[in-house]
Image (spheres, rainbow, N blue to C red):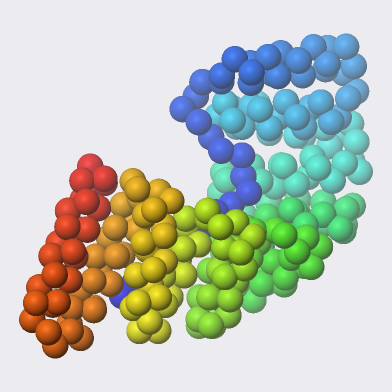
Length: 253
């Protein structure tokens, strides 16, 4: 079964192209701050982050470039520009910016995490793992670093290691739906159907509208039914699988 693992990246979420009232106020605040002090590099970075949320990638890049021109030692500017470059598909450019940010601020866990994600997207698993390791070393409560390292370990065929990282993700964030789904997928691969079922049940309890959780649970019910010798129990499991498949399909529409 192909594992349906969910990647998460620490990149500003892009919405539908509109800013809410608070974000509009913040944008205007930074516009005024820059007007008052055109040499405020941090204000350009903060305005750039808001522009990313507004899907104004060109404007954001312009602000990050300006911030770096004003202060070539501002690690935050390189990190955020790296995030944007990675999102726009310029992976090598992103890596270069992350490298510079780390050179300037070697104890920033987020930058190592972001660089690890970009390397993973380039399928550079060997290069990505030390970055996730370093992010966790610097911040032992960095949930997403554990989670993405777990995904990476799966691609390195370290299933047990991946499960351990998902375990920690869940310990740190007990409502982390994606971690339950991913851990359930791996448990299912190891033929721990009961453990997988428990994870999918928890994911659905936390997010009743998660189509992936229903779809994976349906597969788990089918696998359990195949091993069941009792015809009544087998029929019940197949019906549960059918119900879950219907629910997953309904949620995907």
